Length: 176
Figure (cartoon, helix red, strand yellow):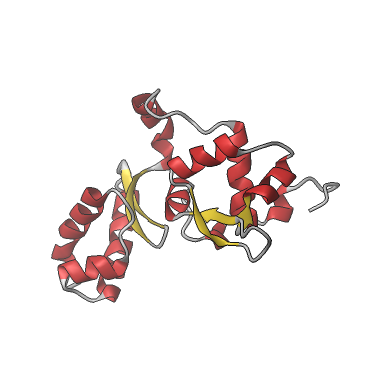
């Protein structure tokens, strides 16, 4: 391929960015067609997998990002041990409700969970996993919450449609 010499620059951009880069941005910086960038990334992914490298390139949150191979998760966990605290069960439950039911108000979440969620909501906002996405057309105009691109990135999703079907996750005798 004519643009093979661009693999190094693409890899450098993805590594230095630390967050997903849209194809358009990569193509613009390197002054080449988006189609060529996509072909080069596909080749690079194949090479990384074939060579059993520790990193790969994944499509996530509307762009491409360099990530470690999943098979090294335990090894990397040792490196990151104690660096960042995990989300509590309450935060994970609240985040799941928001992800599957968005846009959703605080009161609607509290009704589903059966408890107040002020602290949990602030934690999710602080970690930028959720954001205010508008106001509900109802009395008091309550804030509507939804997930962010950081949420997609954290859970390795390209888009919200990649979430599993909620019905498939519920026990058979559970109401949806």
